[in-house]
Amino acid sequence: MTDILPISRFLPLPRYFRKAPLTVQAYEPEEFSASPVDDVQRAIAQVGEFNIWVTKQLAEMPSVLTLALEKRLISTLESHDIGHEILQQTILHFSGHGFPAEVELRQEEGEIDDDRVLAAIAQEIEPAHFCQERAHHVTASPSGQLALKMAGDFSPSKKLTDIWLSSLSILAKEAGKQVHVHPFEAAQEFSKTLYSLLGTIAQQLRYENPSDTLLSRQQRFTAAYQIQLCDAFLIIPDQAADFLSLLFSELSEAIGAGCTLNGDWGELCLSLTQDLYFRLSPPDFVVDPNFVESEEVE
Amino acid sequence: VTTTFSYIHLSDFHFCTEPLRLNALNLIKRNVRETIDTCRAQRQKFGIASVAKPASYVPSITSGVAQFCYKHTQSIDGIIVSGDLATTGMTTDIGVARAFVDDPPLGGFRSESRRPTLNSARRPIYVLPGNHDRYANNFATTNSRLFDFAFEHYLHNFNGYVGHWVRRKTGQYLGFIYADFTLRARTDATTKLGAYGQGRVYQDVFDDLKKQTFALKSKYRGISISWVVHFAPFDCGPHLELIDWQQIAQAASAAGVLTTLCGHTHNQAKIQAHGHTIYCAGSAGCVDSEDSSTAHLLRFEMDGSNFGVRRENYRWNGRQIKFERLADD
Image (tube, rainbow over all chains, first blue to last red; front, side):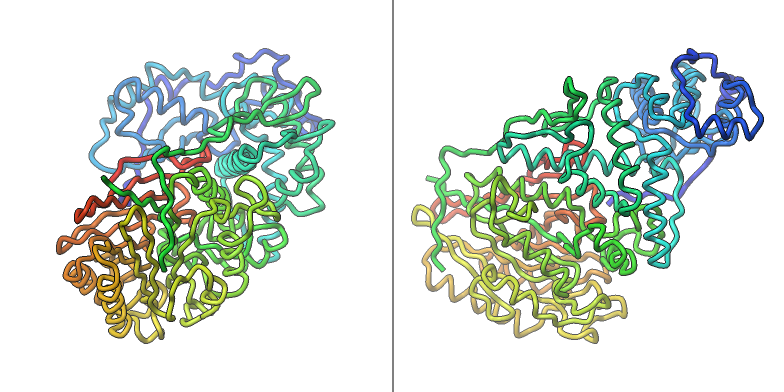
């Protein structure tokens, strides 16, 4: 068992990061499409200009480290040969309002060379990266989020995780408990659960030589998978329809936009009719030509 | 000519009521994951996971275990599960564990109810109870015997505390003798919390284990013997201790038993003491081992009077949804 020493500390970023102004100019206007809910909220807040609205939202958001940024950070440190000192779980989160001013690291063992870490980050991670990563969480509509044409992992929208958390909260409340969860933790757990469920289904199908590998028909998850998805996420029935339709919409758009969901089992693909299906790898058996089965004596 | 017996060694699934919506309220109220004695975060809040994943096992990993066994079906002699199949010996938990072991396969490694099953490997399965399988409730009250009824066909030659099985290949015999050292009473633990994680080397069970060893050695000339117990017969801290564990390795060595297989700690380990080797399996799906679940493939190699064992270790990759091979030991 790895002993994790509970030593936490704040690592100040260089001035270049701390003082850099927050900007959303990197985004083309058409890359965003604010949802009606977002529009209403903006109207109530009496903020007319969209970029100012996004800036305001960013400033009020709790500091989180998105999975994609976490990976970028790790790969940057690895390219500077200091990746072995900092594991993914070492980075706790960024803090600061509107723009990350500090990085919190958990030290596992030995000393981390602060200067080397800071130099590596300063050299390769631009402020725009932070803004862009945060923007994934700001856009309220799936189409807006997916218009960023992200590659790599699927990450759910806040609206989707909110439905999930709402179901969990109801169950927890009825069981006499409360759910306290950070949005980042919820998004990460959501993705993990989804990958795990779809991968498990695919691995099971892979060994059954199925004639049908469709996950959806006519842009709806098939009935069997609807049940499995709701069971895996513990979605209560009166929230199931919203959850399933939004999940399908986000997942299919993400796959269509180049997001990958694959593994040893194969990959999840989008058909010409915009339905999701598994492209399965052939089953894998271990065959020992010299193997002779033993016989039971007693 | 070397004769090789191959066995998959699994341990500590900790099955409980299935984590479906229907059971969610019961599971959340029950806090089943917090009853696991090895749970590293036992005293901490689990955050979202305590509600989102209320079970004590991870279904995707146990499905991966069934897949692992199924893909090795043409190269193994059997599957050994060294205890803690369920989180308690109550009907609901034992029923899920039994379905995983015993349900007849329909296609691939799934049963008619579309759940993964070890039975799909179509190889002999051998189980023994762990401390959790003997809990009569959520508070570690001992001596539930439901496990014995549920797994009657998988407890080979079992007298209630000790059992054995013997197999033969190209004239060579390999025997396994297993023993149940779970506590008979809470007061047999050395600490208050020990009732949740300790076992004890009861003298009558221990004597029976040794007696059965000599009996098989007398009956089958040149037989190689391994012991299988749930508790780790080495120092693993007071909370998980097999009380009087020191006797095991010493007696095994004296009796010419080369290996003991065990589980319980949820950490894979290989320990050598008194010329005796102990192979401890990690957990194969318990929620506290989500990122470190393991399955093991044991190769018992015999060449005349020489007997050797090596172990292939596999760890769960939750992203690839498969067990990946680690270094052998």
